[in-house]
Image (tube, rainbow, N blue to C red; front, side):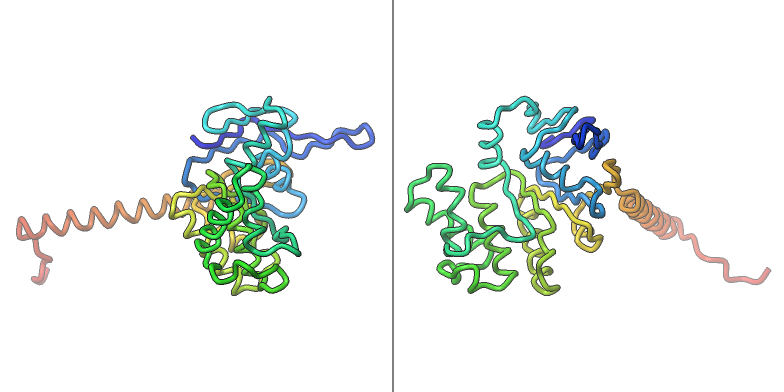
Amino acid sequence: MLLELKHIYKNYLQDKIVIPVLKDVNISIDEGEYVAIMGPSGSGKTTLMNIIGCLDRPTKGEFLLEGESIVNYNENRLSDLRLNTLGFVFQSFNLLPKQTALDNVALPLSYAGVPVKKRKEIAFQALKRVGLAERVHFRPSQLSGGQQQRVAIARALVNNPKIILADEPTGALDSRSGIQVMNLFQQLNEEGVTIIMITHDANIANHAKKVFHIFDGEIVEDKERKEKQQAEVQSEKEAKNDTVFSEIEQDFGVKEWEGEI
């Protein structure tokens, strides 16, 4: 198991009043899965993303990453996780406006202490991977929204993370650019990257193989998707039974009665 959240609670204190935001959240994600966490504004999904992304700590509960509890990690160890294990993609791109695409993508590598020449080589390969090899020297203002988001995805990939966390990654894009970005996430998942998508949009969530709905801080597995999968399994069984019966007919010469009664 790559990631497990067990009985996670998150409370905030406002004017001496405890505000519960997450209530007994349980999630398990295997390596290579494509998961969506879907819910409306105020449902707690951003707080949940911040906990998964090691940007915030739960009030109570267990967080296991590759089987190891990280709830008591100090800030330095959490920072290392954010740098080396997790990649982040945000709705607003979060690119440095005066830096080129190449420099933006190379930024996490500079934090990791990678030499300049090496980090530029790695950053170029990441941009090539997302189809922007010919835009490496362009600044964000010279790129379309979809291209800027692909730069952000390349930046998330540059340290070869095990998990990419994407928070409403198509929210600032037109429909065409949004489709291109979602196709890119699909491609990355097929290459083995674990994707966790945070969204309010059912169309975006439908790209995932596992969907969790979050409402008022409580999360449940998508029943509709489970029912659909069960229906597909039943359909396969029925098709198999039809095939077996057809073979029996051929073996024993069973034919439909054609006479009169």
